[in-house]
Image 1 (cartoon, rainbow, N blue to C red):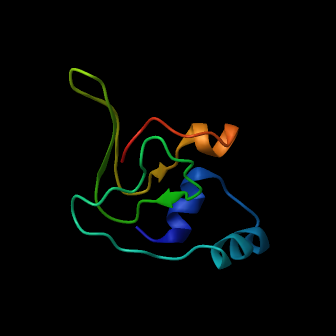
Image 2 (image 1 turned 120 degrees about the vertical axis):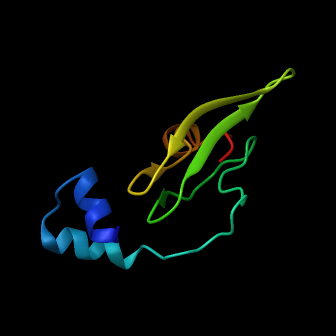
Length: 92
């Protein structure tokens, strides 16, 4: 899946807007097991999954709770950090 397909899946933007957005996107690659988002930290990055799968979860005293699995084409963001500018509770 390429970035144009991912953006179009989220919302069909006018071409000029899409090109401007793409200028602020940097492709990064991480190995299996890499932590994208950390709990108790304000996360400022938004990730678009080009390839692979990610698990979004949190730890409790007793165990881990999985919220969501993200696949190719999905967006990964700490909503609490993004919307409220507060430390998130999720890990990914």
